[in-house]
Length: 121
Length: 108
Image 1 (cartoon, each protein chain N blue to C red):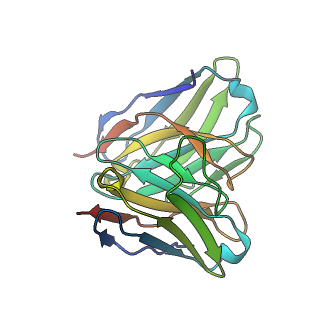
Image 2: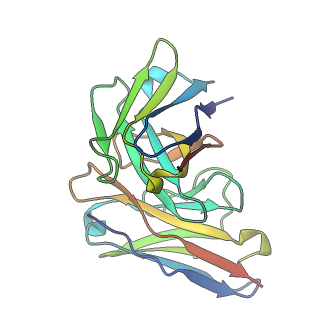
Image 3: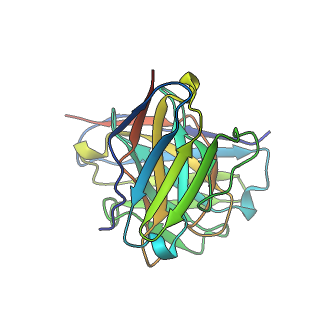
């Protein structure tokens, strides 16, 4: 069965870095676009980043552009999110999400359970 | 930056029709998608490409789009449909994804 499992969340200080990972299984990872979607505590969903199936195309929300980098290792079936210069407003549950269709006009058909990132001094 | 606007809350009695709207300037040319999120759970897709229903989603869920507005309709809402609902689409360039602010549906 299709599974995406996030890891790497935790409590960090403002201005520091953190890398999230998402281990995918049960499908041919290298043929699917992937996304990160985040949700601040008690708030709504926010799309954060996109990477194409081959890693050749990436897009970011304005709120994370220049600070976050999405990447993937298709040989390891793993998606990453490198988060630098973290701010208090980045505190969120981060979901790894599979895109069923190409690009951003896509169904998000499988979601992980999320990993919580807390940015606090 | 681009925004999708939803009403914060909608309330209906069991068996009534619930309508949740989502407005955005790019919607005339971009699909809308709808997600249901129950407390403490990951979101679930309930409508894609404006009006298509994934397998396993009850027929009472339907979607439509007209001009700058997309609408999720739950015909005969059930107590188990209580959840937050989010629309999703992209900006006109297609390079940024956007979720609406979410609508809390109360069925009581």
